[in-house]
Image (tube, rainbow, N blue to C red; front, side):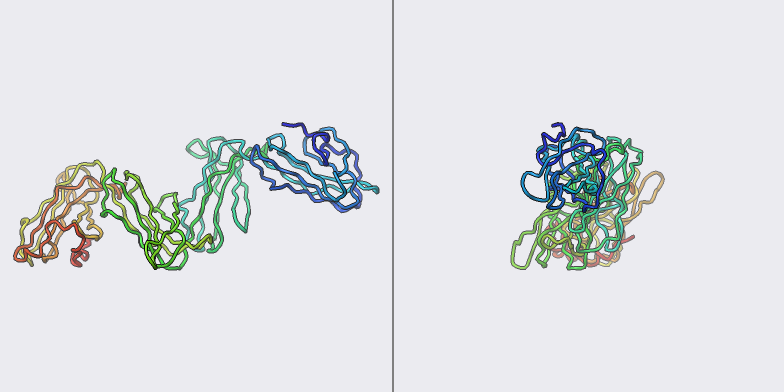
Length: 443
């Protein structure tokens, strides 16, 4: 970079001030515009302001002994500037300024720490366990990097801007990281953070900033609804969009997944009067999309969010072998009879799930029983009513990944005789939602 000499910096001379007697003059003020944390390659100006009698300004940079000229401000006035057209690591450091008048030198200003950012690649910033934090709760923010930083700095953006620094610790995955505890969180303030990594011996040379992390603090205003265009089980590879909607006119919506780090946000649109909604396309679904989702509504640029929607469970059918589904006493039964649907598999299974086509109800779940090396569960529909007629499928899952299901069993059609007109052999219209079925949730 340009050497820091008085000749190259109009108005401010730079160097080590030797044998200067500090007098009783008021100490000058030093600051940087647009700020003291400067991305590499961008311009910054250091200002020093003394009194109107100031004749010469002088800037010290810690650790350098560059020769300096005594220089006067460019025109009449009480301040001088040092313009740096392109910030580099050479310009980063700790600065103080002084000025002299006919009666002597002032004392030194406070220190200005001029920081360059972008010297190393950005660290990652995540919230543990989740970026959704209940009112009054706390959260741990983890800043980590593979660059071996031994210091990390966390900044909070917004009106109540602040920053904190911690030593880096070795993490098991060859990273160094720092864990910052944040809280208790309150509504109404922005909770957006970034972090930087740096090395202890060059404290003014920082990495690029991490991506911003916004914490979401649910409030009390009306909760939205979270809907899916598909049924409760999605086949791997299917395109899926989740829709968050409300009769409160929210300006934006956010989607969270339990245990996940992402908090995508979408601006609201108004498909009709009195309704606001946003679509969250998840794209082709893969096994990682299984889980429990909630959405939130937000007003304008304020950081206040609504209460969470009811949770929506997404179950993804993967490649695992399908179970078999059979019925006792048989697929055609009379009202009032006792019916058992038997789901079984030779593969290890922790839970069996039974779905009825065309209903929006949550599936029935049963722990599997091990019968001589075969896993099975018996779903009892007793006493049968016409509402039980329909098409059933069952799936298997493991407790290690409860939202990942096997392929479905072959469909089983249950016909309730004597009321043929009412039996629903292939109801995909969603019209048949018998309350009896909902009441059968066996835990």
